[in-house]
Amino acid sequence: MLSFARLSLFLLLLAPTAVFAGAWPREAGQVFLSFSASQKTTSDTGETYPYTSGYAEYGLTPNLTLGVDGGSDGADDWRAIAFVQYAFPAMGRHRVSVQLGGGAIPVPLLETIEPIVRPGVSWGTALETPWGPGWAGLDLTYQYAPTSEETVFKADATVGVRPRPDRAWILQLQSEDPSVAADTLTLEPSYVIDVLPGRSLQLGAS
Image (tube, rainbow, N blue to C red; front, top):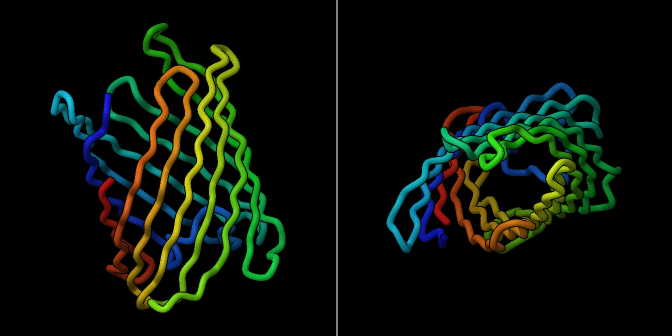
């Protein structure tokens, strides 16, 4: 089923640099929360599917970040994952981090819940552009369900720029390769506005 359009609304809280995720660690003692809601419409049937998600990070040490990642369509599509991420010391403008997560997903055909593991690696670098400071990143994750042996490989490439301190433009290319479904490729531009100190609103479409 082909996804024709998706409108997204993200509320990013308690993180002035919320859009710098991926390879960058959360500062020790700092909390980052993100809540999103999206509506997906399929081009062949015109059906719409809502999806809400939540994401949280806590900086345990300068290089160690703990987090949770979850989402649901209100029916049989949801995920719940906890993870730990280690960021290697900065190499100039470049950052590299590794992540290990574990959690659960539903198996609708079997009417059961299946455990999963999700290792990942991220790379990021700071940029200087004619429109202001920016960044680029690549996030790779490999989700594995030991019971069914199903896998999902994801690769997300992101480029962002801040034309002013309280504004940011972000362009992300998302690729997903599941073992039991068709591959997907999504282009998602978005615009971030800092609405209050430590709180941002991100509007996007895909």
